[in-house]
Amino acid sequence: MNVKWTVEALNDLEEIELFIAKDNIDRALSFVNELIDFGDSLGNFANKGTQAKWTNDTSVKEMYYKDYTFIYEINSDSVIIHEIHNFAKMIRHFNK
Image 1 (spheres, rainbow, N blue to C red):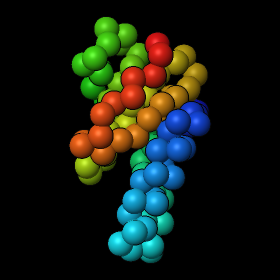
Image 2 (tube, rainbow, N blue to C red):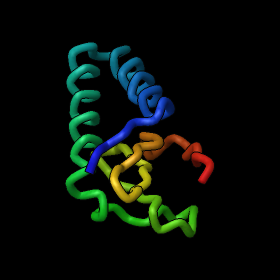
Image 3 (cartoon, helix red, strand yellow):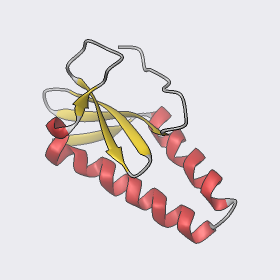
């Protein structure tokens, strides 16, 4: 399955990188690469995520990587990553 990243998800990656870079630029870059690799791998195991609790739409899933939550949607031919947030951040809830 193809993986597509929304502008919001890409902005989340940038914010995460900027936040971590305040303490360690090298770790910021390597961690964002880990997040990208994890997100790209969702195409292989998208159904392993749990249904998002805040919607009845079974195509909207959550998957966790370390302290981060990926919110994504499964379509017939793709996985769309809508946002990535730290557990401490509020969910933006994309319009679905």
